[in-house]
Picture 1 (spheres, rainbow over the protein chains, first blue to last red):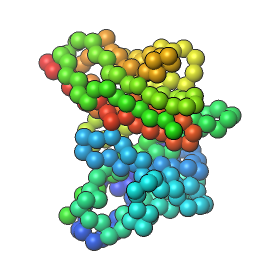
Picture 2 (cartoon, one colour):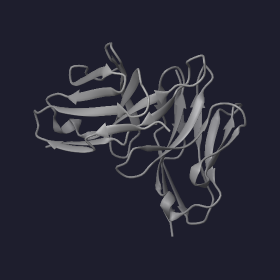
Picture 3 (cartoon, one colour):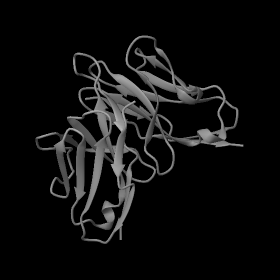
Picture 4 (spheres, rainbow over the protein chains, first blue to last red):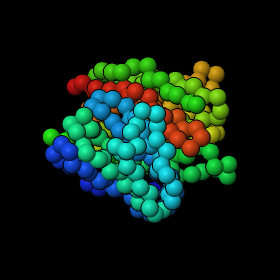
Length: 120
Length: 111
């Protein structure tokens, strides 16, 4: 089946630094990838849709200048948390759709293992 | 736009007892429904999915779910749970180009 990896699996950084998280589709190409954020004991919240070769689409309330997304190739999307602060500490998960159906609608998502970010 | 409601935030159950985790969805178009399980500090693992066809869907680890269009539900069931089933379970609906999740149900299996 389709495999999505994330790197790093966890990261601890000081407040004010920037952190880059990578999301890779290992055995398939993904023109679209999704970034989610999950707070403890809560559900996944869609942050943004990453589009290969074009700008990302951000959900309402997500700061695009804070969470920079780059989708430079068909297998790699990166999320950079700029000037991180303790409130940015969270579990970040990416996913890539495995399209089905000729209509192009309704995509099963393949999820990465997640990245635990802790900002001190 | 589609949305998902998981009716129980926590479900405690004794080992070997049956369990049902409830999920209702809303959508103006045809949807595809999923159940995922998440163990602590891990990503999501697909339990099962409904795309089309038979409304009773069987998944991994002995779980199954039934799609009920008239009641807009997709409840997850297991006839006999194990301690190892303790985890967070998410119902999700996929529509046009994205996926939305319910708030999650914490299943705790007690010995």
